[in-house]
Image: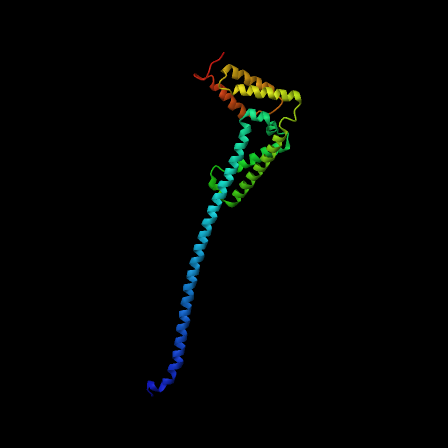
Length: 224
């Protein structure tokens, strides 16, 4: 048998093979390291995107809820104030297409508004509610513009006189300086004047009646 020295010529091919394996293993490990880093970057980016979407949805949800509240407040300015309603009677006249459309849109928006706002985080529910509020706001704007344009122009001169008397009587009924008897009498006469002319929302009537009733309590006035 020959000595190891007799196979000196194999050292270079084997060394080349081993060196190639080592290089490939090193390259593979480096690629795994880079892939792991990239995967972590993607995961971090995804988490940041999810957080951004959640925050945006929450902001959008708050914006829509605030818009809904704003339109409701504008409507309450008519529904709860009989004097204002007398000036713009079309706002409760459901024979008017614009008025009917706004009232229907309000009902839909109110129905879709959940008691728990977190329910709106579900995309489909939020989109449906958002669109309903948009329809409500648009319909209200259209009705209000037309009501302000027309004011009492749809009424005859005699009917406008009745409306003006009713407006003055409502002012007396709401006047804390008048006696309870004067306020009650003014309110009854105002309702008589408005009969058949405009629809008085129950909320407006109840609010004024509560104010008048308060005058009957001790320390709030006296009857004649």
